[in-house]
Image (cartoon, rainbow, N blue to C red; front, side):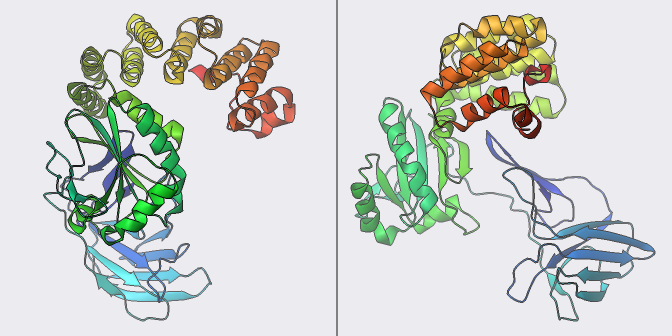
Amino acid sequence: MPFDMDGDGKQDLALRTLQGLRIYKNVNQSTNHFIQIEAQDRNGQTVEGSLVTVTVGDKTRIARLTRDGSFNSQVAPRVHFGLGQEIAPVTCTVRWPNGMESRFANLAVDQRYRVQPGLRTAVRVDRPKWVESLPTFGSAGRGISGRALTPRGTPRTLIKEDRVTVINLWAPWCEPCKDEMPHLDALSKSESSWLDVVGLGVEPNKGQAYADYFKENQLTYPLLMADKQLLETIFPDGKSRLPTTLVYNREGRLVRRYSGSLSKVQLDAIVAPLKNFDTSAEDYVWKSEMAEQEGDQFAAYLALKDAVKKAPKSVSILVQAAYSADRVGAQQDAVELVERAVKARPKSILGWRATARLLSKYGGAAAAQARVEKAPNTLAILILKSELAGAIKNEGLALELARQAQKIEPDSPAVKRRIRWLTDPEARKLDLRNIGDSKSLFE
């Protein structure tokens, strides 16, 4: 989401992607002016819904203060007004959600102010400064050894040579943490040949309580404790967010960071590409993404072809390369890449859904249905087969495939939604999450 991160009045961008959190600094050399308003109650809490009006010269600008963002995001707790070249004193009026109004006059441009109901003056707030050297964690090797401790206080290394490492920050009082810990334990056991899972407690002086919780819940992956220095490295703003999951590749580079509880499906999807994911392949993926942002789709495709050479069995890279090939018109390459993806992991819905979309585009839904028909009958793939059958107007087969999926997992919301969509005409009008058996499903 856009917001003024470094306090220079230009809107920067924080973007959360599957590759982690990215920060884009706005380096535009514009000399236009601005003003920012924070509307808070007497307890310092943001008053959402406040209508803020600023007037400078003969121009008036209006914005409503809200924290709502798009999926899994939010906006900054303030309103930002661009003022162009206006430099006259600014007048700010705030209509609070209860209908009362407050007026603040003679505000300067290029400043951030905090206003509160019942006060006659606005308080100038210091804006943040951009940090030139951001702290890193685990980059360029395993320099964090000695910062993590056993529950008894013995230093231990967090990241081992040539191993993928999942570090999960948690606490016994954190309910979302408890939800994902069985999945972490199962992952630790099933992928022990190449992956390490570490539970990292956030209260080093309570190591025994953390150890007791592990023992009571029969968790088998290693438990370590983060000291103050390590916590400040992971959370430089001083605010711990639990659970937080950090994922490191085989060279100790942080490649994924997540806040919030992760499901088993999400964890599996996060770590699977890293099993055979060479670091140099990852570098080519980054190069491709940078080329995409610059609008050079062909350079992005060439970078992904190099990534495929380095990680020929990574389904995520193969699928990403297939879509990139499609964008530059390399249809034959796209088909070849999705074929390689489904052969590398025959039960991966990622590869089969890409196959369905591209073959539908090139040869129609019937061609896609004929190819996907040969896929293994997992829950997700049966739903995909049902969608394809519906796309060729074979609703009897579509329902039969959905019923097969129901036998695998009777309580699956996706299966129930699919069956309801096929059997209830009214549901088709109401259930917008399932866009149906239209051609757009595979475009």
